[in-house]
Amino acid sequence: MAASDGDRYRALADAEFSGGYPTDDTATALSDELFFQRATQSYLWALPAVNMYAMKKGLGAVAGTGYNVMSVYEKRLKPNTVITTPNSDVIYCMGFADLSQTGPLILEAPPKIQGLLDDFWHRPLTGPNIDGVQYRGDIGIPGPDKGNGGKYLIVPAGQKIEDLGVNPADYFVYECRTNGLMIFQRGFFQSVDDLTPGVNAVQGLVVRPLKGDAKPMEFKHVSDIPANALFPHDGSYFDMLNELIQSEQLDTVDPYMHGVLAALGISKGADFKPTDHQRELLDQGAKTAWRMAKNIAAHYDEEANALWWSDRHWVAHAKTELDDFWHTLLDEEWRVRKTGYTDVDAKAHMFINAYSISTGMISSIVGFGAKYGAAYKDSKGEYLRGENHYTIDLPANPPANILWSVTVYDSESASGVDAPGQVYPSLNSMNNLKFNPDGSVTFHVGPNPPEGAQNWLKTIPGKGWFSLIRWYGPTEAFFDRKYKPGDFVKQ
Image (cartoon, rainbow, N blue to C red; front, side, top):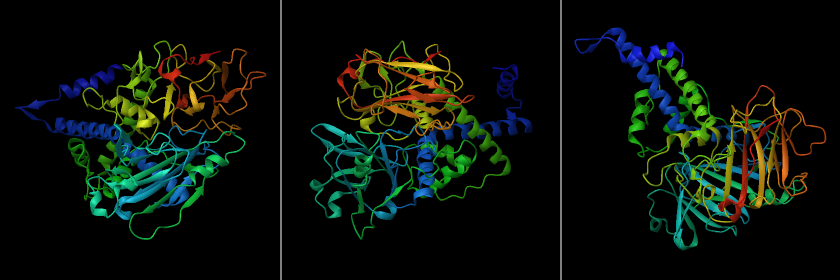
């Protein structure tokens, strides 16, 4: 920290008071500082919601809006869609609904999809408890229909099912705590040369109101259409947050932080009219908070219980103990299971660089859901940078029943690295990979491929990047810690 920074903090701590009251200069300095700090903390706290709302707006601008409208990445998701850590190795199908306009919704999930339902504060919907298993968010393979397809009834939280005139036994009932609802499906395929099975699977979805006429489903193919679904990094973030607050029901989950928002001028039913000076502070607060969150992510390997393996730099979003991969330390709302307190760094790390959450994304059931590892640093603990050439060795027999993949993401936007000539920023188990004699595989990552390199991902000089490994349908070898990927090694 520069000496001037330390002087700033000392100046605040020693700000002049006269007779127990602040001087005019002190009052101005402290009021500005308080407003700035509230803006910074509000940005971090609201990241899950604004991340979600930005996706709704960004994808809606491309595909249109409505409960029946789904954005389908029929050619897989490409870097022209700017969104946090998308998966380019499955078929994405995403849509958004507003229960205040539709009332309860029926969702007919097709077979062979892996999907989830989140509310607009990025919390998984609460589903049924079946044979002691509490479902949260998941539909499809990790959900109660087990990938066979099924009917789901989505109702506002607190809705009495008996008042709807339906037989609850006919549906898997899920409760949503917000007006907004995200419907997110992943479809799978067996060959990168034939994506039809994945596209057909997600396009089997039907969403319709419980009451009234249903609109026909519209599956908009958007793989080749540029879209920006990323939340702002500046003061316009608070305009988007205010728009969300006004569109939603009154939220009572965190009254203190909603009070902090109100102190910034954002509250349900109120006009958001910051002065020019306040607007400047909001802009500075947003830019600072964005950097704070990115700093948390960049050093997440130094967090307690964040590493998957002590001698690697791969981190686990939900945190886990090094000798126990069967249990996550955090729940689906980023709360420490033992205390119920929010892990604020884990939550910031998740929603500055990723989106969507369900039990299946952090569960420890063999063959269901998925496991993820993120790396921001190489084997020496240095940031991954686009001008360097790296290799990474993955052992034989990756622990995934469905697929596994390695993806490179832009460190600033967290969207796929958009390198010239590279269609997808990932390689997966269905690609024509070159394996080593022992069944392991070596990937090369850098701006130029070494001679003869077949397994190569391209990066951009001057731009940092990070990586995710995904294991869909993780096998017991993962949970038993028998499989351990290498680090990225700078050549």
